[in-house]
Amino acid sequence: MKTDTYRGAITRAMRHAMEKNERTILFGQGVTDHVGILGTTLNLEKEFGSDRVFETPLAEDSMTGFALGASLSGLYPIHVHIRADFMLLAMNQLVNSIAKYRYMYGGLFATPMLIRSIVGRSWGQGAQHSQSLQALFAHIPGIYVVMPSSARTAYATYIYANSACASPVVSLEHRLLYDYSFDRKDDEDVIFYPFTSFRVRQGGDVTIVATSIMVEEAIRAANYVKEMTGLDAEIIDLHCISHPDENLIIESVRKTGRLIVADTGWESFGVCAEIARIIATREPNVLRAPIKCLSLAKAPCPTAHRLEHWYYPDMANLVDSIYSLCFDRFDHGKQLPSEEYVKEVHKTFKGPF
Image (cartoon, rainbow, N blue to C red; front, side, top):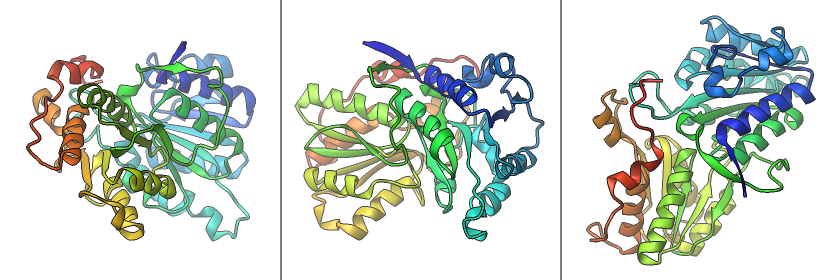
């Protein structure tokens, strides 16, 4: 079985977009430096020229406005923000213009573009450089908001967005996923409709609806509880935060009767709240137990490594939640995975970047 990294898949998608669509331009802070947005844009300036791949000044609002103008002029902009926090400086362009242009002009204009940004833990990022803000963007009609959790979904989403989508797409990539290796099947490059949700594991005891890296944590947790107790968890990759597949989620919860929502953002007014709303308003009677939500602690992210460890949920929290739901008790008495096992996928200290 061949493998592909998350980083490698995004790099292939960026190169494909530049090669197959001559209208594509790629820009952002760090796009042409020696790191190249964690390796996803390396050497693209040399391959396609500085008129199509270029750095930007520290002016997020202006550069997002530039993306809007480029899109209206017939280009396809890919604008990269090295951290999602910086997108807050561009909210006026994104919310008041990009998301609403087609609506305000009766469909005469479209604003196709891809805005890539990075979220998630990495020791030392602190309160202003690690926020997972997908709920803010998904709240706005007119934007597709995705959180690719695998190499395949990242590649397919970016190629589809560049070649077939007339709407703006905001994608939030988790920085811990870049080094993940994924099995690459023979049909890996087959492009599918990506603005939906996907079932990634079948199971009958509990449903886990997860975003971004929490999909990988859910898979590890499901494998652990299956081995230890025989419980089978079903996992749904929410993927498109702004357009969840409500029927898929409800169908799964009908089968299991139990639901865990695992997100990389805060619980209140976010993805956890939205998935709970879907069940509560459409089919609340399918639940055999209250919904459990895993999310960030309700506080700004700490910088200290030990505090950060408690701030983020992981597969051990998921295992604990599965046991609590399936054995109908908070004090289930089951063995949780060791700290060493849990941290296998999290990098040790390498500095704040």
